[in-house]
Length: 156
Image (cartoon, rainbow, N blue to C red; front, top):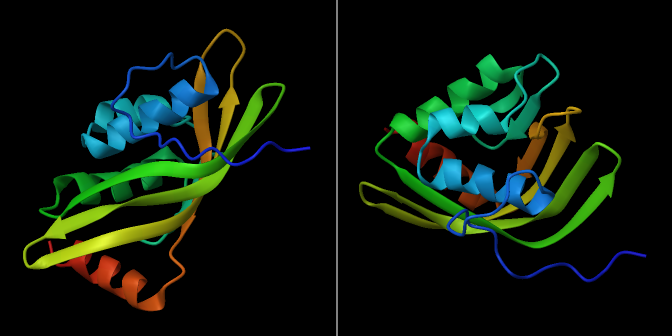
């Protein structure tokens, strides 16, 4: 039986041991919120098996395609910050996944949005190594928020 969803947010601001699932998630949010592409690269698995499906990039496969989405977000003038909350963690052997929600803000010239995103992330541990993200899926339920979010990031 699953425990209750965790409401304490993960935002990457608190130092965590990246060899743990919570630490790997925290590292991702630290990389995203500080626009640290090198840290983001170390968080993701560097293989063709990595896949991301999100509101800004559609489906991307392999780190190089995934990287292009983060480069666009990090190099643009819009500032996006999110935190992960209302989540459950599931771990089996060398795989864990987290299912929950992201909330945050987008600030761009003349646009301020309150983001609400359904999110799942899957990580795999390579023996003798650390956790690496291999899959992310994010969805925005509100069609107007999705259109506004995509437009704000594209206008950069």
